Length: 93
Image (cartoon, rainbow, N blue to C red):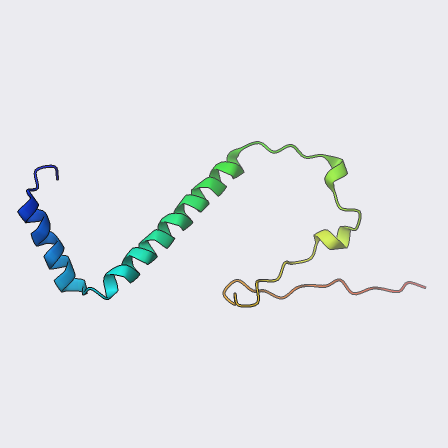
């Protein structure tokens, strides 16, 4: 790829513009940037998961039902939303 002359680079850019159009190129670049950010964050998360974690017994919440709750998605985010399972109080006689 280092052997490309300036005229060849201009020709490649012209062909890309003709194929995709000038209006779609910014959208394609934006989606490529989003994909790169997602890939980077997932790679960091995988590295973080591989690190050994130190668990302490004092970090556990006082209410065990509070830890069992499911977190709701953001109001506009419907792709990852799931119902929250609330524990019903039971009365024992």
